[in-house]
Length: 225
Image 1 (tube, rainbow, N blue to C red):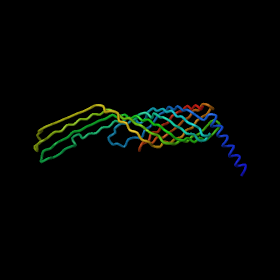
Image 2: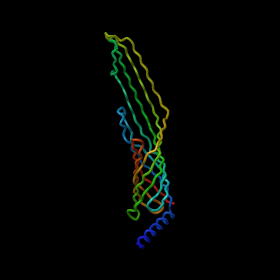
Image 3: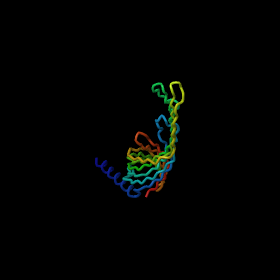
Image 4: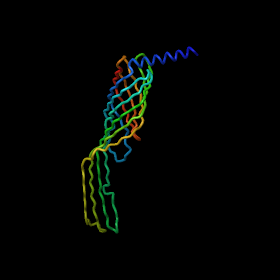
C-alpha cells in the first residue's frame, strides 16, 4: 500500500514538472469543412465543401489533460433554390378562371465562425506519437446573404375561354446580411507527432450547429512554450 501511494505521488509530481516546463501551446490549423446537406425540397444545388482555418491556445494541467480555447473559421455554405407554379395555380370562380404563374430563385451564401472552450485528453502511443480526444462548447456565428428573383403573372378567362385581363410583376435584388448566433457542443480527435517544442497533427472536429453539423478536418502546427 505504501509503495502504491509513493508511486502515485511520484507520478503526480512528474506530471506537474512536465506542465511547468512547457505548459502553454499555440496551434494553427488549415484544412477544409464539409457541411450537412439541406433537407429543403426547393434547394437545387449545394456547395457543401469549404476551406477553413483555426487557432487554438492551450494550457497543459499535466501531460494527460489540457484546457483549450480556440477560434475556427469554418468557411461558407452556398445554396441555390428554385420554386415555381407554372400553369398549376388555376382557380374557378363562377365559371371564370384565373391562372397563376409564379417562379422564384435565390442564391444564398452563409459564412460560419466558431469560438470554443473545452478540454483535451492526450495519451502517448509511441515516443513521439500522441493521440488526443477533445470536447467542449462552442459559440457559433453565421452570417447569411445573397441574391433573389421573383416573377408573377396572372390571367382571367371567361367561361368560353376568352382572355379578359392579364397582370404581371417581377423583382430581383440582394438581401442584407442576416446574423445568427448560439451555442452547441463540439468534439473531435487528433493524432500528432512531437519533436519537443514543435508538433504536427492531423485533426478532425465535429461542430454541432443547431440540428446540423460542420465536419472540420485539418493539419495543425503546434508550438509549446
